Image (tube, rainbow over the protein chains, first blue to last red):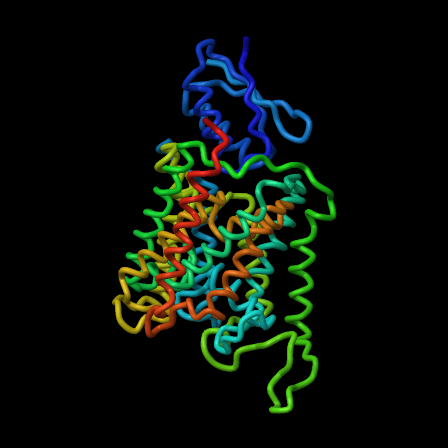
Length: 70
Length: 360
């Protein structure tokens, strides 16, 4: 089951920390992260790419859904 | 992550040069931009504190908010949001301000003081880093002020509306008559001497503020995240921006003859190393727990973030408290009450850090 982390509404740097924790326990090599537009989306994307994931982005409600795959 | 982070570096260069130019145009020494000092001056202009030498509605501050609004609109990032433990943020803003006024400058000005040769800033910056590290300790343990929620459009516009209102007060210089002694009566006070009387022409300050607001919104320039993300996430892209900011201000100061290295006789500064350090430990910790430096909080408040606006309101209250309770330092040094306030602030932040945990 692909894990989804909803980081919407949290102040920096919490969205990235939540992503970091999810990546640390990720066994399937795929994750979904929901983020707000702007800074959190950029920060999570940068961190995920740095951690070796490929990031696909799609608009979702008021923010974005980031699909992370190894 | 060793690449040059183009946007933050470009932002740092523009903001650094602009800050030094603002000093040339009349702002106080090493105070081209200081969010703490300028918020304090603005609060004083409104009469919430009566320190006569630091009263002026600073257009730079208003420009930050207006610039952030313009940029957020342009890039479709304006989003009214609220509800992430606002009253705790109010106190964080208050104590961050008190710490900054013990040191005499926000993180922006700490770097600008360094770029102007004020070596007292080194203790402040060391304190700032220390405060951020303590904040990281709490963040790693799961510290959180909780989730915000989408709110009403009008709520998001409140801070920009306030900024425009203050701008109107500044431009009209409205006075409601005079006291019997002939002193200007409220609502607006303007210093006739001291740092509050030193300012660049209104239009230059305003345009500079708006330009910095736009750039800072787009680049996410943040003097706290620069340190925090480098340590916590090994992500140095904002740190590159801050280093560019310091170098750009330093080089511009050299060209303008504004670089005066030394400890003694620095503008709006004192030489008490211990309290320069501890004041900024408090500030750095409070800013880290609130999620960003004072400039960043202003920018967020212009983007529709009501929680950041509450933090700014806390900073404003902190400025009033700092002067009304004789906590703010002067060129002569700290006051005898300042240490108590700093310790109370640190205790508050530590209690917050230990008690407000959401993530495991």
